[in-house]
Amino acid sequence: MFVCSGCSTANQPVYDVADQNRTWRHLNFFEYPCYLHSELPRTKCEKCGKILRVNVPWAINPRHYFTLNFDALVMTMAKDMPMNAIARLLGEHDTRLWRILHYYVEQAIEAQDLSHVTKISTDETSSKRGHNYITIFMDADQKVVICATEGHV
Ligand SMILES: [Zn+2]
Image (tube, rainbow, N blue to C red; front, side, top):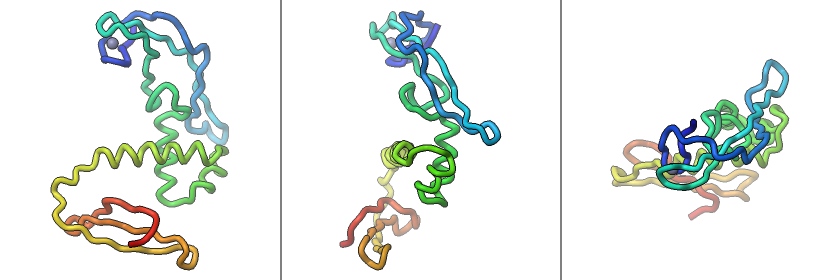
């Protein structure tokens, strides 16, 4: 029995097993990469009538290749390291790791409450000898970055 991933109704019976063998990359076990393998059943919900793959508690969704712990490691490392260095260290392609970063940044942007902001301040900086500008918008009272974007004003 599983929870319907569409409407969250509990105790739904297994309809079938659509994915015979799904794999997720987890944190390394000492120096060895560690993977989770699982079959993922689908439920036919008695309430909403949808046939859906069950969610897994270890990843943001069943199609996401990495576990939540692996995502957390990448996000922590991304605060201090360039993504290509993280990719090299973890033995993953940086494109996959950028997807993790973009997912969580989009979630954070959606969760932002800007209703209290009354004043903003902007600043711009450049890298590579002035060819790549970044403009930063801040909540002037809270001193918190609201948005950073390429280009300058
Ligand atoms: Zn349902």
